[in-house]
Each structure stands twice: as structure tokens, then as C-alpha cells.
Amino acid sequence: MSSAALLEAAFTFLEGDVLAAVNQEQPGLLVPGSVTAARPATRHRFARRDKPNAATVEIALFRRREESEGIGTDRVLLEFDLRCAVRTKDQSEGKAQAQLTADLARALVRHYRRVSEIALPVAGATLRYADAFVFRVDEDPSSGELARSIVRLTLTFSEALA
Image (cartoon, rainbow, N blue to C red; front, side, top):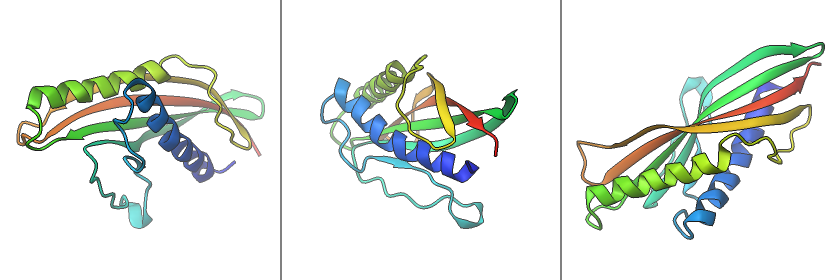
């Protein structure tokens, strides 16, 4: 399986799964289109993404690592940053936005923390394990309208070598 195909499969899966996981704990918080993947565009620049929704999650690849697992297989670790943001300009205090963002991040960590059974169908690779932790929660000091948090998600695959 190619690196690009594995990454695309992970992005596609996460876009739907993140939306479902958050809305299961906080119904209606994320609307369709509020979870986007930062897919690399041509010339190593990321494609532009519009973020019109009050609460959003952007999925960005942080790092890809490969390790030898055995004869004919590699372990592939895809590390993603799930960048959660809440923009509620003139609707709530900064503390409320920061709390909502922290709740959003904790919901994602609960869903992905130490999980070994996620149905992510990928030809030539098997998802073995997922883990997540809150990497950062902060409020943008320069803006009264934005609160952010980052969840670091690691997906571990076993990939058959061609």
C-alpha cells in the first residue's frame, strides 16, 4: 500500500469518526463540515480550509514513522494533531469558550485513548492500536473570540511489504 493511500484512508475515516465521537458526548456541537483534514496540496503547501462554524476540528498530520515489525511487515505510526477551536464571538466569555474547547478535546481523548478495535478498512494494512492525549489547551491571548486545544492522536498500523 502506498503512503499516500494509507494517509488518505486515515483522513477520510477520521473526518467521520471525530464528528460522530464528539456529537455522541455533546449532541449538535459539531455540524457536518466542521471537521476537516489538512491534506497536503501541491508544492508542500496545505490546501486552504474555510472555518465558518462556531466549533471546528482540523485534522493535521504531525509525523509519519515506519519501523520494522517482522519479515514482510512494517509498523507504520501516523501521528495527527486534532486541532479543536471554538469561535463564539460576542456570544460567551473567554472562560466558557476555553471550557468548551477543553471538553471537546477530552471527548476525543476518551474516544481514542488506548483503543485496539477500530474498524478502519485499509487494503494492505491493519490498524492495530490508537492512542490519544491532550497536547495543549489554551486561549488565544490576542483574541477574545477564539479558544483552541490540540489532541495528539497516534494510529499504529501493520503494513504488508510489497
